Length: 203
Image (cartoon, rainbow, N blue to C red; front, side):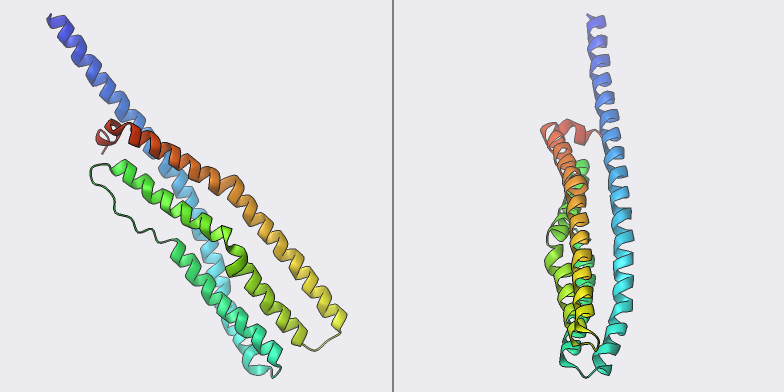
């Protein structure tokens, strides 16, 4: 009888240890992936915000120096778009979420999921808040500038191709990296919610 009780106790403890180890591995793996993701986002934001801070004074100079209304309009659009870009990038990094103290693992994953979802929404709409406004601003600038018309049109076409390629790269990153990462977090979160014991045994 005592032998059976000891076996049962050992079995229960071994099960809890296994759950604890699996949960810790899960947290470590997701934290590592999320840290790599956050590093990429920080690098991108640092570059984009840095470029925006340089472009605002540059195109402010064009706005005040040139008397052509089309150049002024183009410069104003580019300046305003830079402020929008900075706002959108900073706003996307904010993840307002209350972590449930009873399930810290699920809470962490929920915050990670929210951050990834915001980046996905950001990329999905990149054409409207980033590429298209900049392109329109550049078009006005070039059409209002002094120079041979066909050369200016050629520049516009080249910029359109460049922006099209940038859009393609963003959609590719969305398809191949962000969406699969989001699905991975969702699957992990579903597994934890389906097995609440895993959450309570790991702190």
